[in-house]
Length: 144
Image (cartoon, rainbow, N blue to C red; front, side, top):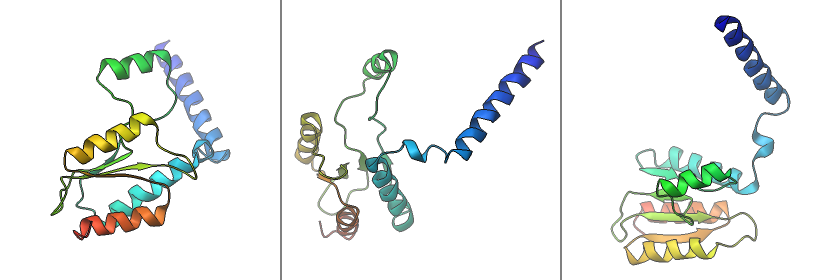
């Protein structure tokens, strides 16, 4: 009986996956900031593959349990989207808060950027891919 249930569950999982592929996958659920984030992380991976860089998955809507769990585990609001842990000659690391269009950082995001600056990090918010690329290149060439 279990194997029938497992086969049936796998069938429905495959059916859902096929549906999303036919419907254009999950891309249609991504916002402008998500696309910018992806573009920036791909650039870092291509141009600076040695960099210890990550996206902090701290955005989005969550269920009440997920919010509880995040807080319970020590997550903090406002952490910048991208953290690069490689120091350069002047800074201990690079933190970038990405915004799409005319969006601005929240007070918690501004506070994190300020606190990271106090701790010797280059920390800023940017809303344009070309500006992000310029900052990354300057940071890794020790020009920032």
